[in-house]
Image (tube, rainbow, N blue to C red):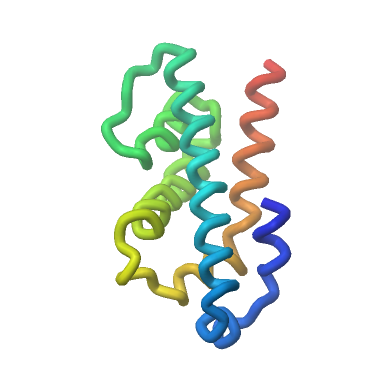
Length: 122
């Protein structure tokens, strides 16, 4: 996450023009999102909460089970769709969406980590 924060002040024009920075941001987002999904899947498996059919359902399930605040989980689950675009739809990646997530949504990863840490302490 700290690596993504190094890019959070880049403006949209610079991100569009610098393909190396764009590729780095996309890859770091992919890794961060997959970490969230892996942690969510491990908790679901360990707690015997079933097997979600889609990535976004892993985050939603944590909300349903009050491991994450439900409202946050519903909103943050959209990040799974962003991961799918990054991984599978290279030609359809909207640089504006990458920039939006970079400049407006990085704190969601910290919120996720905070709630997971609190749940683990209980």
